[in-house]
Length: 92
Image (cartoon, rainbow, N blue to C red; front, side, top):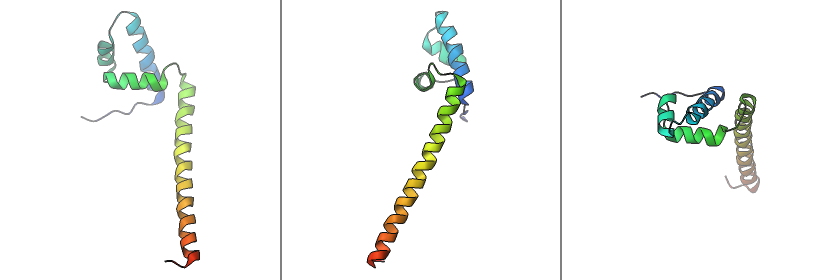
């Protein structure tokens, strides 16, 4: 079965829908089934996006992408530095 990737906006909308269903007396397994996700996914979403607005969720995703890009850049630069140090010592 193919997994669906939800955008942060969709996740927040589903969490709001879940809050309404839970307030009506439904249990978490029923709510998760209604949303079309597993209980584990529901709890993960709630932990990551609970109480966020859509703009905040977008900003979070942008920052996560930027962080990953910067980590890769630092890793590449560190590797270059090690290679240059080896070359300077004459140990190739």
